Length: 185
Image 1: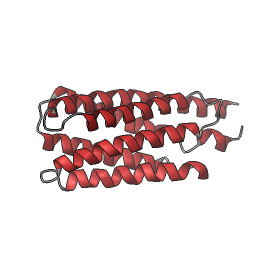
Image 2 (image 1 turned 180 degrees about the vertical axis):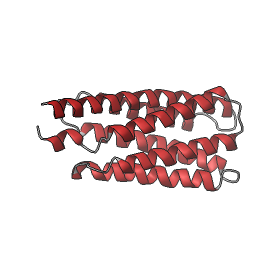
Image 3 (image 1 turned 135 degrees about the vertical axis):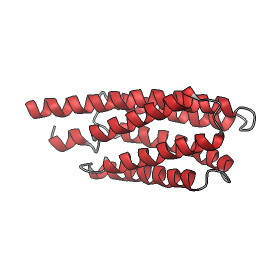
Image 4 (image 1 turned 90 degrees about the horizontal axis):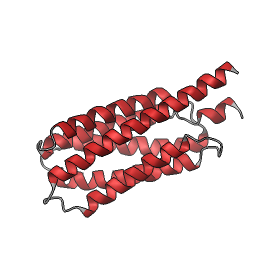
């Protein structure tokens, strides 16, 4: 297996940064689940923006096959994050729908990214886990009436962010160890 095959655009530092950001935002949401939706919109917008930036950073050194998925994930996160941050008051309900759709798309892109990993790469199951959790949370948010349970949505997003943060940190650790092992050979 070549060095390029092991990198696959999976920058451990970028994944670790995204994981730490997700954990931080998840902790904030869980600490104040009754916060105003506008504040939640700002926090989620910031996460989507930073997650998009991390995905674009992961493009550095990515194989050609992975670049499309990373680019779409990164650009959609940046665009969604900018929309959330630019118009939090007037578009909160619409932005929640964008978030729900983004979670489903993010999950699909993570799964596609994982499926394209070499068969012997066991860390792809972490990517699949992140993808499945994103899809489930997105679908649950679509299924929940928005006006009936804003606090429930906040708790759901907080739990999602913490779990995703832990999984991203696990994935970053796995990739870092792979690279360390590769350089020791």
